[in-house]
Image 1 (cartoon, rainbow, N blue to C red):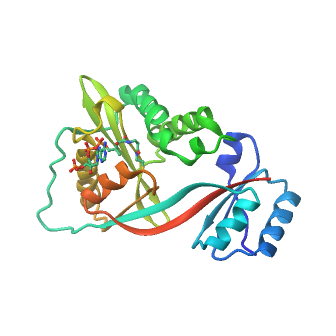
Image 2: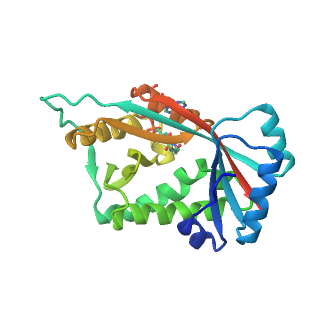
Length: 239
Ligand SMILES: CC(C)(COP(=O)(O)OP(=O)(O)OC[C@H]1O[C@@H](n2cnc3c(N)ncnc32)[C@H](O)[C@@H]1OP(=O)(O)O)[C@@H](O)C(=O)NCCC(=O)NCCS
């Protein structure tokens, strides 16, 4: 039976006990065992990441009222670190405290909309918005992010990209552009600046996680040379 990993940050934020499971295969029996264990340990919600999914498993999960909220899609780009490194980052600048209000707005209004928390009505748009506002504050004020890159227009931040070091490598974490400024090349400029920064730190592989249904983000990453390396169905299970 797959292990349930307790998620302290999510649990504290939502005020309920939340855990996560990564499973290779699931059967009716293993699902029953997980439910029993979860109830015994008073979990209220489980995030379930599946390595693979067949039609049969999908039917089994849906008949047990698990909600398919996402298909977690990871992309990666190999960076060629050359001796003569470009340092050109165009109009992109690093985080300063005066941008904080704009970044909270972008995270709450733009980035959170694409998240699995917005899809699941039990969490809902309002909590998703708050979660992303907290996330950006943590990223730029508590060094959760290694780097925060900003695009400024008329003294306001209109685009944001943060980079975060995880066990599995360096990841693009928060990425979004204010709606009136989308489709004007700002996302592309932020991705290029992220690459320049990563190369300056001798990072050889840059990764990002998005949702399969987020076609705009996928196109933006692909246009910069990122390729899909994995796709995993993602469920929420309310107990
Ligand atoms: C994804 C996002 C950051 C892209 O920023 P942007 O400034 O709008 O993107 P750009 O104008 O630089 O365009 C970059 C590429 O994105 C794709 N793209 C941009 N807008 C698009 C649209 N409306 N439809 C389809 N593809 C689009 C294109 O491939 C484009 O490259 P091209 O112009 O060479 O074809 C922005 O759309 C956004 O904030 N989306 C909501 C938040 C989000 O989804 N964040 C990603 C979470 S992982």
